[in-house]
Amino acid sequence: MNVRNARPRPLSQIVLCVGIAALSAGLATGQTVGEPLPGWAPGYLDIHFINTGRGDAALLVFPDGTSLQVDAGDGGWDEGPPRGVVRKPNDSRTAGEWLARYAARALAHDTNPKIDYAFLTHLHSDHMAGFEDLAANISIGKMIDRGWPDYDYPVPVESNSEATAHIAFLKRAGKTGTLQVEKLRSGRNDQIVLLRDRQAYPQFEVRNIAANGEVWTGLAENTRQHFPLNYRDLPKQDWPSENQCSAALRISYGAFDFYTGGDMPGQLQPGQPPWMDLETAVAKAVGPVEIAAANHHGNRDSTNAFFVESLRPTFWILQVWSSDHPGHDVLARMLSKRLYPDDRFVLATNMPVANRQVIGPLLDELPSTQGHIVIRVEPGGDTFRALILEDSDESMRVKAVFGPFTSR
Image (cartoon, rainbow, N blue to C red; front, side, top):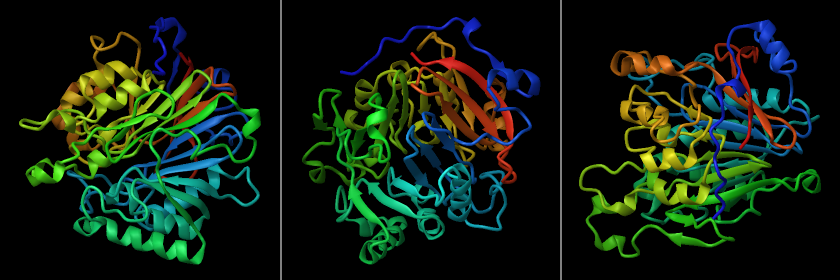
């Protein structure tokens, strides 16, 4: 099992630069508060969590320039506050259109910017409904999801009305040859690879962790099925759900690791059978990471104690758009020094005002609750920073810098 030993780091190794331009400029080598984010450069790994107020969306630029879009949501509550949030930067474009414009800026180092891979964690609108508009405005090479081409597991896709338009888009794009589509193969590390200079970065890997309840064991490419084989004999409320089928990845660059897993649940609700906890099995395979995108936006059915203790990231990332993101107990687990002693920070893309009324002072411990979040990993993966960007316009202006941090 690939699990690194995690060492607590003294606070003296951690420098937080928030709103202090001069200090940020010295520590972040040009990533200065108040100035636009410097562009990607070869050898760096950039992870952009893009806030549209409509769901999950992350764009990664690998060390050789290969790009990966993880989810492109266009869901949420149309009525906005207090249950939801306002669209970002505004409501003049769809989420997919905004994501395409963001990608063009983040990939401006290319003469003809394109997204090499798109990865869909699962078939819910706040993760997938922006892909068609995204693909209409910037080229996407290959789409990878949990079900292509049949989508008949665990139940026929016709029972999930949110997915039908997305699958129709994939089939149209496949027929015209504008987009390749593949099904994720759990356990593999050769499905998403560096496309431009793989030889130069042998310490870089994208590992497929899980999909459809099939979870990597952490050994070679071995997997095991977490769902009961006879689930159709069970009451329908005990059949695997779309969230439980979420696909998960771990991305490694030297000592640096990043985890993302869609809406995967792990905190059992009363009466649920143990196999509905996917997080525990996934955590055993993933091990400690530097950055973890919180499962299910930090919803109350996610981020169980074992998952928190096992991943023990420096940064938890909350991609939030609803007043039930995150759950109070979930946030308490993320911040608990009883579960792991290391210094850690929780960053949110778009924290609803209603949550401050419900959760209260615990939210004061979050150093940033609004804006695009960029993780910039330096060549080789030994050090990284977290940056907050303005999301009310397209300036890419840096609002805060956190770091540098040492990968474990």
